[in-house]
Every structure is written in structure tokens, then in C-alpha cells.
Image (tube, rainbow, N blue to C red; front, side):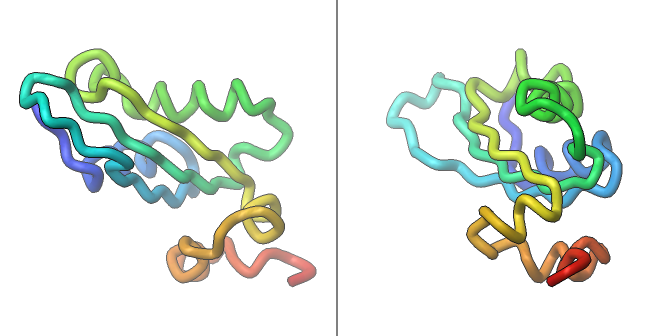
Length: 107
């Protein structure tokens, strides 16, 4: 069963409050039978005060059963809006502005 990056984004955004997610395929495999590898950047104020492990677990929980059926690997980068403003690459800034999460207070 194959899954598209946009479907994973929808799962993450539905499963984590106020999340904005961008999911890509970081590499292509030659083997048709190999499951897909994905990379996700997720920004949410829900991550505030949580450990990195807890943040990543939230993402895995949001993807749910797809982690065992259609996603072979998921590279995850998580940020609060404040952390993203400070350390992110800026590529999600328009989506975060639309969601009312960026610029953050003090920006």
C-alpha cells in the first residue's frame, strides 16, 4: 500500500493540535517492493514543554497504522513556533502565517 506525502501531512495536522506539517520523499529507491521513506518537518505550539522524544512520538501516533503498513521510515524534525522562528529554514513561514502561528510574539 502506497501513501503520498500530502496524505501524511494531513494525518499529522489532524492528529496534533495547530500543527503545520511538510512531508517530502528525501530519497528514491530502485526496488519497487521497498516501502517509502519520508521526511517530515512539523511545527506546533502543542510541542511546547515536551521533550524531543515526546514530540516525535506525537508525530508517530498521528501517522498511526501507516507506520507499519505504508511508511518504512520517517525522518522527523519538530519545532514549536518560537523554535522554528529561531532555528527553522523558513520554508514553512507562509503556511505558519496562514495558520496564525508566525511570526511569533517578539518577532
